[in-house]
Length: 290
Ligand SMILES: Nc1ncnc2c1ncn2[C@@H]1O[C@H](COP(=O)(O)OP(=O)(O)OP(=O)(O)O)[C@@H](O)[C@H]1O
Image (cartoon, rainbow, N blue to C red; front, side, top):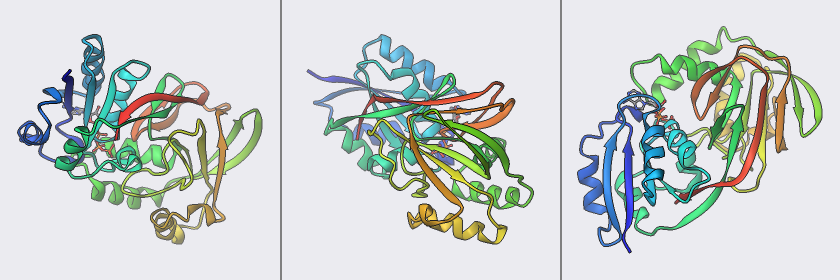
């Protein structure tokens, strides 16, 4: 029996033109296996609505054609259902796609869907939000917020923003409760890693696994500014954990006390949280083709 597959295309992700995407995908998708449909998102959260509708219509596979933000919308709508998620990496960082080993070439990623190979992955929960790759607070949430206001997307804009903002960024004081144990930490940022990387092969938590039912809580302590580049390079070399400014704790649940009106990011999208932050993991709750 042929499977029904819906491609949800984010036209702005990664700053890349996707006008010809349906034509390319139809040329490489195995039409003996799939009935295909294509739809472009018109506004933020549109991918969520479209994927939710697809679940009701018993679509077998919903493919997020975009970056981690698009994956987040599709994943949030289909997790816990029989619908599987496919990914064609078209974002700025493509953290989850890279962690899953999905080819970055659109053509190869579409051809991969023909194999219909699936696996279950954990999903993170931060208050009312789901995350699939990474959530965090502190500097990276601040940058996600600034990045959202930029016209262009892509890695260059992100890096430029990080360099200009780090000069004036002040670390915060946090009280964390990880699996019932309380810690006080001053931090430049704290990341909650489901996968090992932010995207672009920047591995903040090299040992994080997508299917271990555990989050890697990465606390980046304040560091001298002259180390900013070397801290970044450590992520590409997968040696972040060897830095004395990085502490990685494995845990299933985290509560961050007395934080009001704090900026967080959920898979790279900035959100304002008005109450305390509670983070947990929902093991193997999403089925992805990879
Ligand atoms: N038509 C649209 N116009 C404006 N924004 C959109 C539209 N469709 C989706 N969006 C929003 O685009 C944002 C960015 O998408 P996405 O995260 O996929 O790309 P990216 O940020 O370039 O890549 P990555 O997350 O891998 O770094 C998401 O927050 C999504 O809600």
